[in-house]
Length: 305
Image (cartoon, helix red, strand yellow):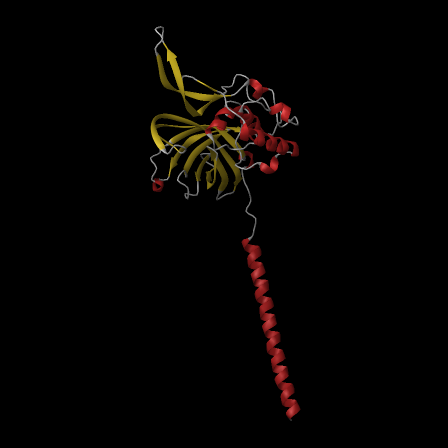
């Protein structure tokens, strides 16, 4: 009888264990079905609207300058790129790029009016809402900062055209480009002697200038040597180096570099990190240029504005 009792107990334990395993298996299968149900791929629509729209971004009134953290009166013109990456029935996903600042956005697309409402996250003081209408390959509309940011930024307008970004190692600055760095003036002591021999000392503000070497040296196509760089100005080498990044669509934060490359019709800012896109030769050239830039000197001159 004792043996039978032990056997019965073991049998009950076996049955309970089997039930638990079966229940766990059923629960797992239910969870799997739920996961499959939740991970249904939402179909994309209007793929013909995907791409980069770039152009003017401007506003009048009190303009807030992010770099100087000050306001001024006038019309502020910037270059803006909107990237539409994905459109579904309920949502639009993409990025805005202006002043080297890349921000994600999410919004909605109204098929009847062919218009977008696009909201940046709101956790940055430069975030806001785009309300734009699209017609063929152009986009126009407005942007307004969120009120909670506390920044006195007027509503800005935008006029964009759809452009396909293409890397081309042959891209160069236009030969009629302004080669003056207006963003970093430096004061120098100057002397003036009149006809009677009286000498006066005064301070003159001068700006960095580049040479025509920036139209001749291409760090995306030629392997640079120390001989190529030893007689160049500091600004020359900065432009030659940053032309490599501009060709890959780097979004410059520094106004100096934005100013130089926005004078071309090929520069399209698409990303704030393109390091992985550089060729081995470009990386070597950039490293060499950085070494020389560290010790190079600038040439300054006086210019009116």
